[in-house]
Length: 367
Image (tube, rainbow, N blue to C red):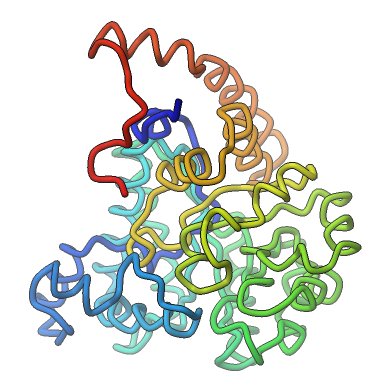
């Protein structure tokens, strides 16, 4: 009998792969556009949702990324960045996400003349406000963009080094993957590695396992963003497993970009069964139209993963954070005790006391 979405909303969780500019509220986009006199492809939330193809299968990563043309229009001031970061923290806290690593590329927010340092500090301020108000802990991952230029990636790497220990915990390479290999951005990766910074790289989503190989062996990645196509190279798969290189899996997003055919054929359960450190993430809460809870619920209902497997992946999320060892250890002890209280039996008893006998029906509003 499937557990409902509400059960997964109560689990303590992480979100280690979530893009700030892909996770705004629709209402916020419309309000910021009105305040800034910015033209959008829709005047209502429904019109905007259709125009941006939110939650739809777009067929390719390039098509999926077109929604960011809209969100970036309204994220060009310090005030909008503070608000977006604070609201993302609030939305995540409401579904009991305890820790997030939010990624974005500061250079994409300078169209109206903002200094790069102002962009970084605005986002950090918004996340601090979210922590003060909602108790959620967050850090930042700064991104180079693989389809812009290696020089711009180096500039983002310099920022990551400058803000290391001040809220920035890693450097990433994002953007269109096909024809833009990570090895072209080696100077950026060399800089961050020379300064003992963490590295995560989008790889193995729109391109094959060769991109994962480059990310690990040439660029020094400690985690891999997505990694759907790792299964195509068994030897590399075992290397990733042996070296505990975590995969930042984003199931619904992978279907929408065409990286996998459907949720039932997603390789993450195979990876989990083999022992790979699989983590579950949103990628983009707005563009994918999801939450961490929904992604876990889909793993349960569409991939047949048990509650025990779900809890194991939740713990993987805390193990894979870019937190200092002792902070990570404290999180794991606390979350481990909390997760032990979540069982099918305890949920059934609690639900029966409140609502009477449970059925296997899906939660309202879910397809």
